[in-house]
Image (cartoon, rainbow, N blue to C red; front, side, top):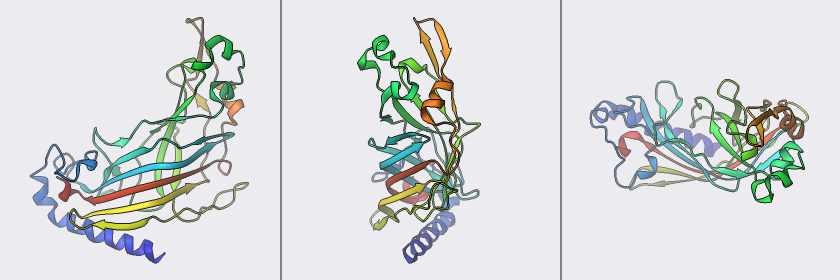
Length: 274
């Protein structure tokens, strides 16, 4: 707890310094970050957004994402980059920022997702791999506060599912509320606890580093799948949303899902970046 309070105090001090210099910095916006700050290119400069006060970059490097009966390990790192709007506290980003679209392999493949065992003969074993890509589905909350609100949708990728097979959407997102503290889920889930990151600072660049933290959430709900279409013989489309839902336990009520996300992150006032 004391570590968390010190962290918030340090961030508040740095953001206050940023605000004091914002008027000067906003007139000198640059297209690219200065040397030593290239990893923050997804954070809007104050020329792009005058309210950009603090730049953030987080790498989710492990964990898992379980919805209904499907549990997908996070093995390929995903990067969330952007900044904080000092007026609203919301996460903001430019064309280089946001959440990187990284494929995670889904255990059981497309047959496990649909239950259609004959697809093995129809498609061939090499085409049965199923991937899940987590995408933003709305405006994230303030990454400097907990819980961190992260609305997402999950794109299920396999040639047999069409191009628009999703769990969640921009109008009906999966609403994650990520915390390093202890959750309070509805039953049957029980509380789980995350891990506060180790803290250090690059004094030469004013960059705060946070290592080996773990966000958790097991109180979110997950909607049913939509847009999943099996096209037979290249021209007969058949909706298989129902199959995907029945095989995956979707929609899944709050208290039946869980995510753990191991992360490293770093942050710095915007005026130091540009």
